[in-house]
Image (cartoon, rainbow, N blue to C red; front, side):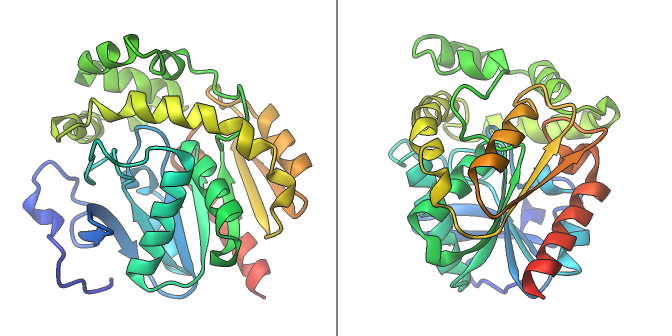
Length: 294
């Protein structure tokens, strides 16, 4: 892992899972304290989580992918254990700018970007705005297509008066409910996993930011969809066959509109196929990037 002199070790934070300790750090990106998880060497592969997720969403992927690539995962501003300032531009463009600032901070001129759900919308925007900084895209049950999100709770969060009320009611039971809607395999939803995700909501502004983010990201969908044909880099589209948040129908639409795309439907997986069926997702990514760099 890169030795950043300004890092604070995650071992100081007892609520974080043991898997993250030793490979995770806090670095400063721009002026934001950012939780990162880095491992491996080679081609930079940046993993961007989805709405209300964290870098820990990639916990079953980092080790295997890091045996082939330099894996860089981080918590987006407003989520996880990164800073959540009220003045950040919580839009797809603001997040795209942050991704490039992250690359600048770690010294990468170019990287492969992989994004799940909202993370997919973010990396699409990053590719459109900064095409010279992106080697390839990996869209995993990606947002960015108008009207694609079918999870009612996420859509209710965008209502100005209702969103803050919903966030004020977040409890461990609510976290468990949401995980149960996006993960196909419920056995993964252990008490420790729920405690990890719930601990996020003890941090400053953690309940205040999500409604702002979801309103802005939904507004950006039409702009991104209208420009999908402009994407010229290789794109791997991975989708869980059982995704009920963004149905596989939208995988087909992305595949039709992006010229250099390859589609992989992952059986036995929902909205987070990287957790439901990590072996299939890891293999798809490794095969794609091995062919791409050959």
